[in-house]
Each structure stands twice: as C-alpha cells, then as structure tokens.
Image 1 (cartoon, rainbow, N blue to C red):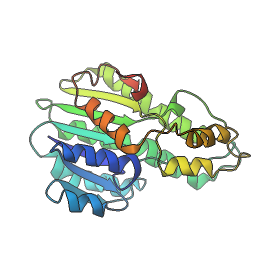
Image 2 (image 1 turned 120 degrees about the vertical axis):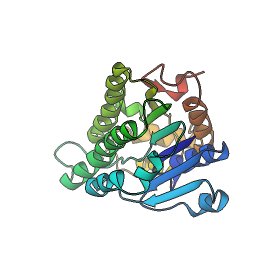
Image 3 (image 1 turned 45 degrees about the vertical axis):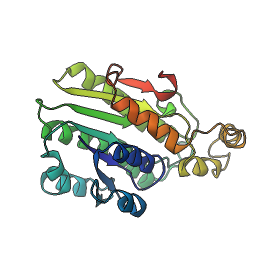
Length: 243
C-alpha cells in the first residue's frame, strides 16, 4: 500500500505521515518544504516533492510527468490524504486581501480536487482507492471572520458527497473533520485580533483548559479510520463522533 499526503512537513500532516509510515505504508509527501526528521526515520518509505500546491500550473505539470505520475503507476492499494490548507484570510468581508482569498481557494479547494481527479484516473478501478479530505468543523458551522475558510472546507464536504454518489468501483471517499488539534493553526487563531475573529476567546479557553487534541493522537485515530472497513460508509464525518 502507498499514500500521497499533502502538507506533510509539519503539524497534523507530519503526524499523519508518521502514523502511515509506522504501518509500513510508503508515503509521497507534497509540501513547500521537506520533513528532515521523518526522512531520517523512514529513509526507505518517505518520498518527498517540494511544491507550492497553491500554484496550480506546477501541480498540474507534476501530475502528468513527475513524482506524482510515477507514484500513481505503482501497483497495489492506494490512499490520498488531502491535508494541506490555509486559514487565512481571517477578516470580515470587505477587509480580505484578494491575493489571500485566491491563495486560499487554490490551496484549499482547487488542489485537493485536482489531486483527487488525477488519483482516481491514475489508480485503476481494479485496485482499492481511498481518498480522505481533511475537513473542519468550520465546514458545518459558520464563524464570523472565517467566511473563506468555512466556504473552502464546506466545498470539500460537498465534493465528497457528490463523488460518493457516483459509486465508482473500488473507490471510497470521506471528508473528515479531525476535531480541534494543537497545531500552529491553533496558535495562529489565538494570535488573531478579536476585531477580525470575534470567537477567539473560545479558542483561547480550549488551549488554557487543555481541551486540544495532540497531533499524534489525532493522526493515529485518523489513520486507523482510513484503513478500516468502515471508511467510506460516511462521505462526511467528524472524527470525534466515530467509535
């Protein structure tokens, strides 16, 4: 079995990569930077390709000739975990940078959808294929100041719902919210002025009261789920609701 994982260089993505690698799964990590610590631990299992997934021409190019195309040609069951994402811009409508909106939509929506399409086309229907989008509670609950983030994560949820209805042979998909995890994104939220994100105090309290999940614990449960027989029975799920 092998897996393509975006955003493997830090945070939850790094923990997901470690959990996959520890199970003997060969991983191709796609991110702007490598993960030297994981590469040293798993030199024979971790392959890395440095790419800005928000730059769509570069992503499309590597799908047709490059590491992703080569990886998809491998035999056996395959996983795609679309983990990379951006929280910014955090601001009310009318105060958002056009460049930040464009970057978020490219990375949070366009890249996962392009990768999912290439993955499904490249891994034949005679092989088991599983796609996981890393979603968010923000896809299902609106937050003032997070209109772009909420919309992009909701797009992944609806993409998974629509693909599931296609019932393609050997293909399972789920857009999974991992819960509230103690990553750099949480630190970014807590550093946001309340004028831009009125619910910041709630996230301050989650950190103060030790209510954040660790990346390692979350990743273990997430990988257990994508490898389980239950994966794909729900096209949209929350890790906190799963047994």
